[in-house]
Amino acid sequence: MAQMNKRATYALDEETIERIRKLSALMHVSQAEVVRRAVALAEEVSDGEAAQKLARLDAYHAKGGISAEKAEEYLGEVRKNRANWDREW
Image (cartoon, rainbow, N blue to C red; front, top):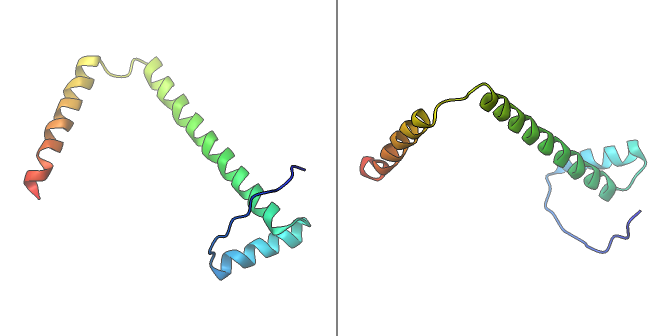
């Protein structure tokens, strides 16, 4: 195991603390290890979701997506609407 040389303090609600304690006991690891594993898992899930989104975008583009003209027309409309936001408030 890597040498741990950084300490951090976090404010957690009582329910989260109890969940960490419970997981620590169930897995027979330290509470810090529970947090490390949770962070690693959250990163994996996040990376997986990003990869799925990129794959869907690639598939959309492979099917032809929309024309550059249509895309520019849409973006022009968005820019116009955003320019009017300040005036509407």
